[in-house]
Length: 102
Image (tube, rainbow, N blue to C red):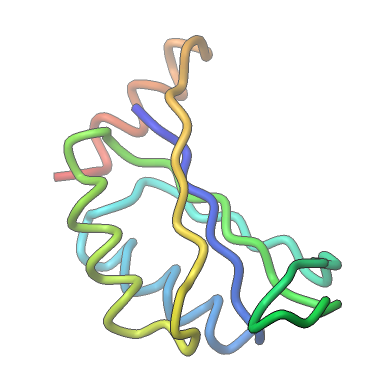
């Protein structure tokens, strides 16, 4: 299992991504963390934005599907889509992820 992080510019975009992934059984759960401040360099400028952070829990084998779905509906030219392996977790929650995803 993995956790995928993705940021976006609005609550509407965040909910759209989350609902798409959940409805397609491509994620077990998506948390939306409001108003994170992101500071990054883009086109040789330092940018400071308020964004929404999506924390997506899914199976490792679904990463490419999740990535493609996010890219299809995400408003950014280059969205953040990064994953981390879940090394440990409660058996019950890990079973929830396994049973909720394709």
